Length: 226
Image (cartoon, rainbow, N blue to C red):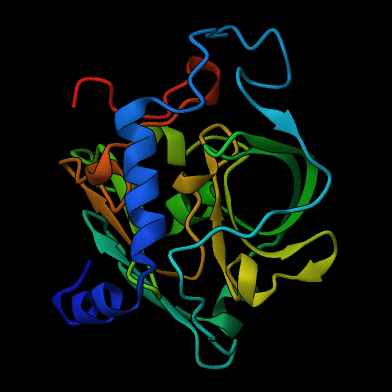
């Protein structure tokens, strides 16, 4: 989180929401202890299937017009870049279908995304050999982190559309990250910046008791060693 964003986040976040989520982590809420590391079941342990798409955020939903949106990618890359939405849409487009698994125990099957694959992003920016992690920052100040190999998975993308329509503000328009293999807090909305790094840097929820990775089939909801 950049220094200039800290006051707006602290002043705007729904403190009760943050406090309750931190308590969930301390109490191990929703944990079943029934790991399924081999993914024998499509529905991960402790999840319930929904057909709607619940809206979860930090209490603010930035309104970002597509014609003013910009995304920067930097850090340990050979080719840092800054894209406008028009430049982003000019990249090769892909369509993918994947499931969502939220740490708050709901899952939604067969979501149809359109956007730019992380494979294409990697081919353009060319991370340096020492890169191990990818760090995200959103326009609401939210941050999170994943390993480079997770970002590189074949079903990961930066999405601008869902079910054939542009993302709504509530779900992260104009562009959000989609990393289906991990709990959905690792797929930040309102994407602003991507940084490739040689060291991990836990993000907003990771420093508030959530697991640093977030594999749904291993029930990596919380940092049980905290």
